[in-house]
Image (cartoon, rainbow, N blue to C red):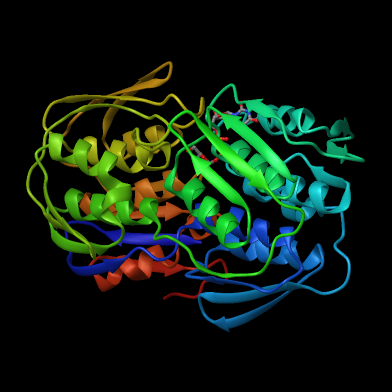
Length: 419
Ligand code: UD1
């Protein structure tokens, strides 16, 4: 797919964040923990979610769409313990089906995951945690084979507050009767969303600053749950507004965006947040230093978009990426658009320029693709973002939502059709 953007237009109006992809994926996996009906609302219509829904169907779930964002999920017959390679390879988040399958069936076979090429992204924390709970895990020909006659509650120490490992272990521990403590867990809002779902399903979750205490039960029940708004999509729209010096309102959960808003305020941007979302008043902005960190630090999933924004800030910025070792693939593309950015180790040195030039650029992952679209909104002339499907993995209609805000943006699909 190609996305053509005619830069230089001011945006105006209101954008809606939609449900969080990074919540929807583990919460969908959590439906494997019960045979009862689980209704999940505000599921975003993005490619990664469609992959997870296909995965659940292959594992023995029947899924009924109650409306375009609400799904009813229940088991039909026995669950299958083997996750299909062709689905797991598309998306790293699918690996979190391992724990739920293992705790339900006593065994699970899940291929090592694929996903965005933003770093090595091993799964050792997931496996060490499951082993601490009593599982045996072996890697045979690229497939993790996990088995356990009996899983027992225990103390787990994570080497790093990994989002996926925390979620994997919370889900598994929810169905192991007794108290399991996860030390050094991730505190991302999406992890708390999973905690809320697991509590509604009948598990106990006590959240403390340095640990989660999971009170597992022998059976979890169905429930009805609405997923939180997507803070990455909301943040992407706010950057779209800022980079075009526009006034826009973004419907979202402002508290989850505070680490981002605080950095953008430091840049001289002005916001007003209320319970419905965030109003941005676009104006010139200045450089900052930022470092990606686990929540409530600055999110790595908004680093590429912020780098695009800082490419046009007055002054010199430093952007340090501490989560993933290969997350600057948008930089050579921004440089192609006349940005002045140099990457040294895990830090991008960004010297603000007064304009970017539209040209052809390549999307290399979900957020890098979004960053290039945002840069195109502000660039002189036409930017063509060549995207083999990354943006649609994480965003529901990003180009058409930006067009509703007044952007001059057009899509050409691979068959040559235009929208
Ligand atoms: C999740 C998000 C992703 C986000 C990331 C960091 C979902 C579906 N995806 O990914 O969008 O960018 O959090 O906020 O929620 N690590 C290991 N061993 C492991 C697990 C992780 O070394 O077993 C490392 C990773 O390589 C990375 C760091 O830990 O350097 C954090 O990764 P993690 O928090 O696990 O990210 P994901 O859950 O994959």
